[in-house]
Image (cartoon, rainbow over all chains, first blue to last red; front, top):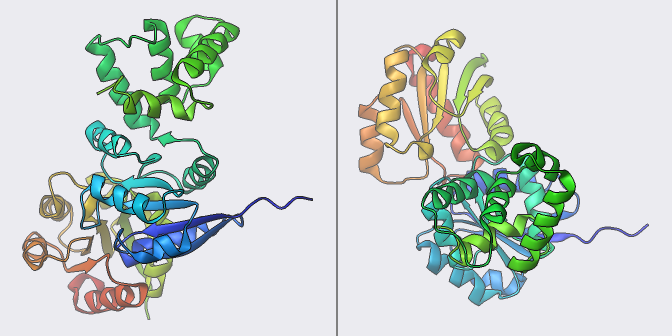
Length: 211
Length: 125
């Protein structure tokens, strides 16, 4: 039996008791190892340990979000950076993703989802909290600023994907067959050049399709 | 050590399991959790202590504490915050906190602060 690869996680969390809690949750998954913690994203330890995934609490560190992400990237360019924040404001998520974060995770996310995100991000995908991404896309929809690349129907489906709906649920919502939705999703993934649904909202935000 | 009932207001779900453990070490058993201040629910549980994470309230911790104090005068209110600013802590005390504990402390220090707070809070004795 092939043992799954262990994902090495590093926590940038100045709040000691919170980093202990994060470690407690993450290490319930035998394929995740928390290799270190620091309160400062400029810590040299990040470069020495070169973790697969860095969790960065941008609410608590002394730097602003762009500087904190850049510091992690400079120390360990191959590491994937997940921003963790209490903010549900779309602007906060957009700033983090525009600064090249690979994920934006709200602090009220469930432990099970946290574990899924670690594996998702370690495998090269991106993640944007669907509640916040959905709000951003809805706001954009009401402003009728359609993408040059996506049709209005595709944009509608992007929003529903960001809300976490399956193809079947999207079909029911839009009165389309599941197969038609699947075709739309394939076109969206191809147009946005992403491999997974989780990357759809992230790409849309980064490329300015949404505000 | 007597076991006291605690009501926890903590939206950060990843923190909850660990928090239960810390509170238990300080002699508190969690009777209910919430991600917001729900006055009716707090009154229904009538806890000896309320543990509230202030970092999740947009209008700031002092307002959250005032809201809790409108619901209960008797419970010991323990505020948890990422801020180390003494002025902020002072405004939390004025607004009704019996203790303000920093998230920057480790588990041992948090447990010790909780025990001290419960030792002097009138409702917990």
